[in-house]
Image (tube, rainbow, N blue to C red; front, side):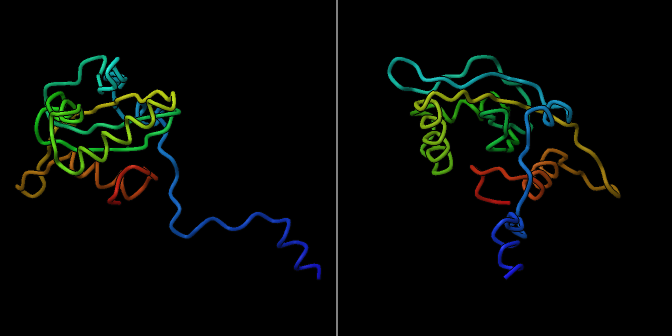
Length: 150
């Protein structure tokens, strides 16, 4: 009986695969820069304030102070982010994220954009894409609910 009372009062253990949230402050401390904010125009189309860098790298969407999505582009970040705007790309991932962004904005949330462009490296003479490795590590380590992999 005592065990039953204790288990009813004690919080359940966290799931074995639970990951911590990735806070915006951790992104900033890790070298990410605030690049802009998503919004909806009068017609309900996505627009972005600010300017993303014209080089490859990682981008994160942050709402409520927490990163909800992280993406990698081997193209220019400004070009990649433009593809989320309606009519710019019909790729399933872009359409899915466009809907997530629009839903958040319609419910009154703010969605900020953070970017980073780490320099590539070399390991044993082989070229290493640092941004790709960083994305893989972030997806393994943190709960990014809009990402499907990780």
